[in-house]
Image (cartoon, rainbow, N blue to C red; front, side, top):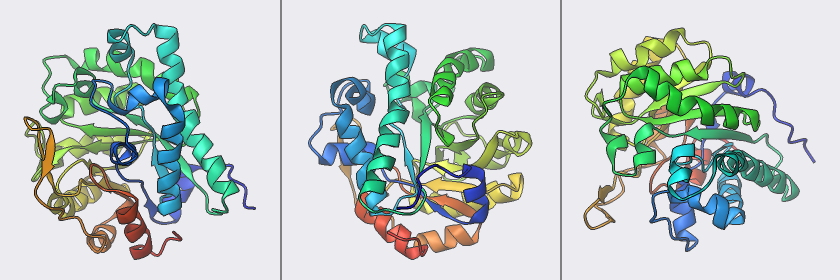
Amino acid sequence: MTSHTSAPFTDALAAGTLVLDGGLSNQLGAAGHDLSDELWSARLLADRPEAITEAHLAYYEAGADVAITSSYQASFEGFAKRGIQRERAAELIALSVELARDAVVEAGRRGIGRRLYVAASVGPYGAMLADGSEYRGRYGLSVAELEAFHRPRMEVLAAAGPDVLALETIPDTAEAEALLRAARGLGVPAWLSYSIAGDRTRAGQPLEEAFGPAAEADEIVAVGVNCCAPEDVEGAVETAARVTGKPVVVYPNSGETWDAQARVWTGRSTFTAEQVEGWRGSGARLIGGCCRVGPGAVTSIARTLDRVA
């Protein structure tokens, strides 16, 4: 059996295109788990950790090379709201990486021979607020205050040994600047991924301006977009590649729309595996899906990109 000791992630990224997983909450919800509280999938770190490993495994078996951990909404402040003390919160944040590693090991037992990677999710400050503000940004906090929020949990995640940090669904340039600062000296590469609407961040900044600072950040090995409409990806890929000269990461939603009042998804999926050929041609090297993109779509992406599913 092929060893699953991870080769350096940056080497794999330089060698070709990697397939990301799909929506973790999508897979957990499909398995019957209730994710309606403020901790979202992070609640299962304490309540049903084995369910998280099973969800990661489903994506590895579907053809994903990289699984993104369940730490998107995991923070010391968020856990404190639930009465979870700091030491236990640190254990749960680190556990998110361990559970994904468990899925890598199990995938090897099941005969998956390709190298698999773990990306530790670092969601935006607004995810902790659980009020939708991660899709607006501009929280009224300074860059220094945002850095102070992110750095402690990033230190815990980095110490847990992921292959890469996924600084994801970032709505504005101030938070991106804070994350770039917080990533320094952690010893783990990272990607920076904005949530966008059209050709701007969710907070309204032009993508050319948003991607710029990442070009000079040594820790950042890829830049791109996620949790957006598939139709917005092509232009963002071209801009990110041109501005930064770095590999591009993309994992959009299905194209359906979330109705926050009714708490249901509406519309139809506009995500097709064929779109990824254009994204790869424009510079995307990490390609997967976010909300409402499940294992079936990931298998289609892997086949389209000639990856072994």
